[in-house]
Length: 199
Image (tube, rainbow, N blue to C red; front, top):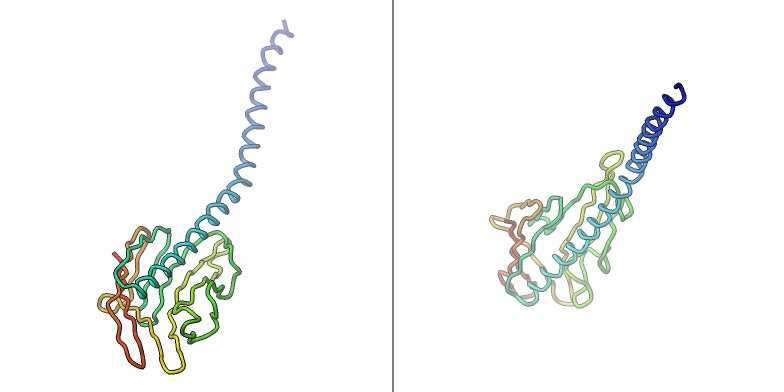
């Protein structure tokens, strides 16, 4: 009689043990796996941000050379700023880590150290990224386009970024960036005026 009672309890104890072991394994996998998943998401987002930076720079350069207008969607989980006073465009992302070195400006352009570029050799834009620690386990990655003057023996070339009312514009994810060439002023100083707006 006693043997039959124990036989009925054994499958119940086995089931409880199996459920407990599975719960522990699932918890450990979640604890170790989530940082790996988050890291992969962050890497994908940062690569997408770098591609956006390069595409925005190219579209502005094309409009400056060829005229017309372009549009681009800011499809990143961050904030973008256009500052006509400093002739800069910046956007930043908060992530748990970065694919870039922290502390300094990582440049994607030629001759980043030159305040004035050389006409025919350098581009107006200096593009790159800066990474700063935000919290213990988070960083802010700031992507930048900085416009500089270009010089030749006798001339200076300027790409001048303007906005509506020439104020600093701020946009968020899914904002539309409008790019248009307003014209050129020629002379000893040649100025190409590029109008930018965020909607």
